[in-house]
Length: 103
Image (cartoon, rainbow, N blue to C red; front, top):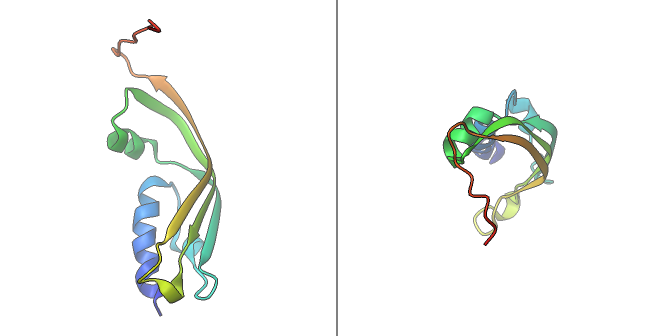
């Protein structure tokens, strides 16, 4: 019952940063409360817009994303999202000056 309310909220946040994620990928167990997603490809354009770093993202992947929803204590315990190994290849944006002194 709670799943029908919480799953779309989680999906909206996770889907913002992950490519090709389907709602069926986030089907959560009412009693277990855990979902594990593996080998996820990041939406690089969204990361660049949100983080505003002097780098361009050339590629980005998450090895494992774990979401724990404490269904029976949702009002008193947090939803925990754990990223296990995120790999990104970055390139310095054109026109960015690098200070090479190590003072």
